[in-house]
Image 1 (cartoon, rainbow, N blue to C red):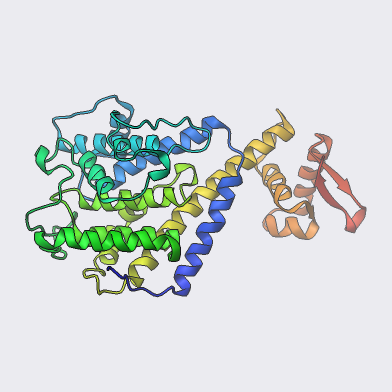
Image 2: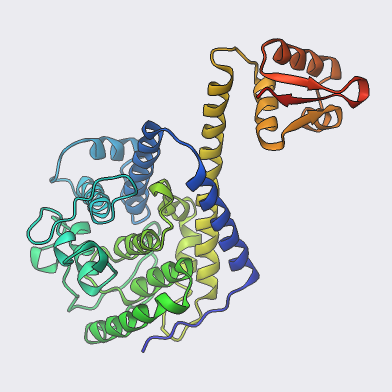
Length: 370
C-alpha cells in the first residue's frame, strides 16, 4: 500500500495554525448574502483564470471573466474552452457539495451534472477513481478525443514547465498507472482516521500530479481534487479562496516544490511546507478582507448616515476590537498626528453620539456608545 513519507515541521504547524485561525474568523463573520455571492464569484473567476494560466493559457483575467459570465459551453478556441471547462467543473462541485443554506441539487440517476451520477446519495460522496475520471473528463472536454476524456492513459507522457518548456520529470509507465492509483486509494481510505485534512489535501495533489493518470489535464485535475478534498473536510471557507493564484504568482516556486516529489519513496515535507504556506497565505488574505467588510457593516449600522473622516473610522474600528481608547493608545495608532487633532476627532465623535467619554483629565478614555 502507498505510504507517504513526511515530517510535520514547525513551519507546517505554524501554517496549519494560521489556516485554522483564519477559518474561524471567516466562519463567524457576518456577511450579507450579496457580498457572499460576490466573493464567491470572484474566487471562481480567479480559479478558472489562474488554474489554466499557470499551464500556459494566455487569456487575461478580464477575458476569463467574460467567458465565465457567458452561457457558452463550447468554443472553437482551445484557450477559451479551457476556461469554460473549469467554470463547468466549479458549477459541478457546487451542485455536488452545496454550502449551508443552499438547496441541494443532488438527484440519483440521470442528471446533467456527470459527477452527481457517480454517487447514490450525498453521504456517499468521496474521492474515488470514478470521481477523478469524471473531473478530468470535464477539464479536457472538447480538448482531446472523446475516448481520452477521463480515461486512464495508455501512452507515455512527460511533464514540462508551462512557462519555460523545461522538461520536469517522467511519470510512471502506462502499465504502472492503475496499480499505483489503487495503492493510493487504499491509503486514502485509511487516511481519514490518521491524517489531518489539510495534510491529506496536499498529499492528494502531489501523488496525483506524480502519477499523471491521464493523457492531458493532470495538473488541473490534481489541484481541483485537492481543493475538493478541503471542501469535504470542512475547509471550504464559503468557497472564497483560490489557491491557484498563489501558485501562479511564482510559477517557478510552485514547479520546484511539486517536482521535489517524483517517486512514492520521496519525502513530501518540502512540498507540504510549500502547500500549507500557500493555503495559509490565501486564507489569511480572505479573512482580512472579510473582517474589514464586517467592520464596515457594523460601522454603518452603528452610525447610520453620520459622515466620518478616515481617522475617525480607524478609531471606531480600533474600539470594535479593543473596547476603549486612551491617550497612550492613539499615540501608537497615529504617531504622526498631534494630540490636538486627535482630540478634535474624538470630540466630534462624542457630539455625533458615536462614542462616549469616561473619566477625567489624564485618566480619560473613550468607548463606543451602546
